[in-house]
Structure formats: structure tokens, C-alpha cells
Image 1 (cartoon, rainbow, N blue to C red):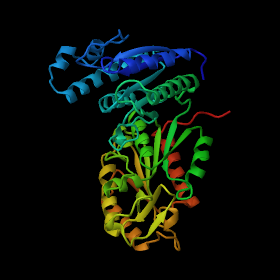
Image 2: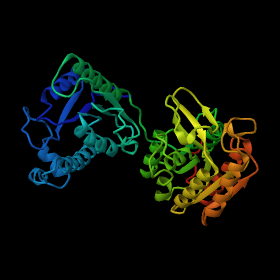
Image 3: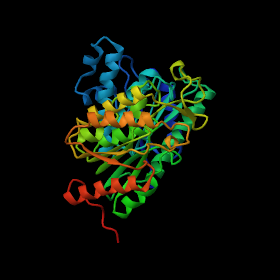
Image 4: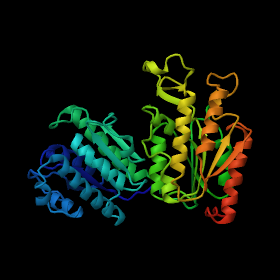
Length: 417
């Protein structure tokens, strides 16, 4: 937390949204912060002089504004401006010139702002005021792990009381975030764990304190779509000393058409970066869906568990499990760092135990057989006669982890006093 007056980068098209941008400037300055306005418009002339004109934005992307205009296509032009805006925003942040970013727009401005937010590191407050905030138009993989969004109600054209309420709320949110944010850098090596809630997967209750006792910071990611996306994005930024990717439900969801997905690149970030990873099939027998919608015809009659009024899961068929197993094998074959797969033959989530609604011993056996056939060296396969929520599972994960630390594959934890 800091008492320093933050300097906010505000991004928008200054030719079409001058009134809105000037209003939000006044709101931010009224709270004691300062503003640099970045103009990402291409064709029009702004009604005021922004601190960062569109010519400077274009240059940051390696082009002139005339070259971008000559593209003759609004989509291509905005993509080019997004490249420059992202590069310029990152440079300003690394120089300490800005402490946070606020962007506003419709679909065009939102498209550009997503690239800028993704370029800024986690811990740099970033807020998007958008007419399509929370829309299904926004691909999950494009949303930065710590992006805040506010729906810009009544914000298509000009100021009005509803629009002002959204603008002033966004201004307060970004200034408050800049003043209260703590440093996101880790003093100790960071370990990522993927999981679901503890009613389904409970291994993190033992793993997290055990790893912290070894001198590591530990971040647990909730694998309901955006959590897995955040894990992948941060892995590709090199933020982790190791990844314990023990819940792969998002991967199965993607393969079988669920909206609860992290995109097609799930289970690839750590491997691409050479980060040591211990993998397990937590939840990889379920296909998630919105529990408030009717089930798909193909899922009628299947075992089903409604977790709450937002999310429920149907059981995968044996063939769907085989597909998921092959996908896991294909993805892990690309890994450039140490990789181990821990396979608990006794079950992979709480609701698949005998007597529970998703118990299917034959389906689990089919998955295990297919996985054995498709995991290839140097991936190490460790099989256990245990359930994923048993202590034997966490003991096996920690044994592999400790061995890799001893071999120098994982950085040692911070010495604890």
C-alpha cells in the first residue's frame, strides 16, 4: 500500500469519446491522482491534446499513423494500434511513469484494451470500462489474470446520468486499486497448484502448508475456466519454480464442448517454458455445464452432480475419457522440463467414490489404460492404489517434488527462520 499520488494511464479514442474521457479525467484528478491520456483513434482529430497522441502510439508499434490509416481496414488498423498501445503502456509502467491503467470503449476499444492489459504485469492495476464487459464475445484466453471490468451501461455515445455513474465508479476503482495494491512479486520461489473447491478436491489442504514449510510461496488456482487461464498465463511469464497441475477438468471441458474452459492451450504453458511439472487427472471424468441451463440432449440420462446454482457436472463416457487421456499424453509429450504424472487408481474426485453419484469403476479403468498407452518418456508415470484425496496421493507428489529439489531441477525454498 502506498500514499503516493498514483499516475493513471487512460486509454480511449479521443476523437469519438472526448467528452467521456475528459469527464473521467476530472473524476480521477478529484481524488488526488494524475492522468496521462493515450489516444488510440486513427482517423479523426481529437478535441483536446492528449499527453500520448496517436502518432506516438503508432510509432511504439513500429509504424507511422499514415501507414496504419493506409491499411484501409478498421480491424487491421485497430490491431496495429493495439500493438503500439501495449508496447507503450508496458514501457511507461517499467519506467515507473504510470501506476495503473484504465481503458474505455465499445468492441473496438475493448479489443485493443485486452492486449494492453495482457502486456502489463500482474500487480499493475488495470481496469476496463466496456459496453461488452462480461460478454461471451470476450475470449477467456485474452483476459489478463487480474483485469477488473465494469459494464459501461448507457455508454455508447455521449454523457448521460447512467454513463456518468459508470465512469465515476471506474475512476474510483482504479485510483483505489493503485493506492491499495501490494507488491505481487514473490520473495520466495512460487509454486502453482491447480484444484477445484475442497468439497471435490482436497489435496491442497495438505500440499500448501507442506510446501510453505519448505520455504515456498504457493498459489492455488480454481480450475473453473478463468483459473486455469490465469495459471497458464503466469506460467508463460516464468512466474513459477514448479507447477503442480493436479486438476485437468478444464482440459476435458475444452475437448468435449463445455463453456467452462481455459482454451485449447491448457496444460501447455509450464511445459513450453521448461518449468518442472507434476500432473494428475483431478476432475478429468466430469464435463461441466451451467446448472441453470437445460442439459444437452447428449447428456440426458447421465449421472449428474449439481454443485450449486451456477455449475454442475455430468459424467464422461468411457470413450470421452479415452479422448481426454490421449490429449493429456499429446500435450505432455511437448514438455521441455521435468514432468511426472501421478495416477491415483482409486479415484480422481470426491464424487467418484463408491456410493457417490459419479462412481464409475469401469470408466476410470478405461481412462487409466488409455493414459498408460499414450504417456511417453521422458514423462514419468507414478501409479497409486489410492484416491486423489487420500494422504498417499499428496505424499507421492511431495516425494517427487523433494527429489527434484535435491537434484537441482526445482529452486530450493527460502530458508525459514
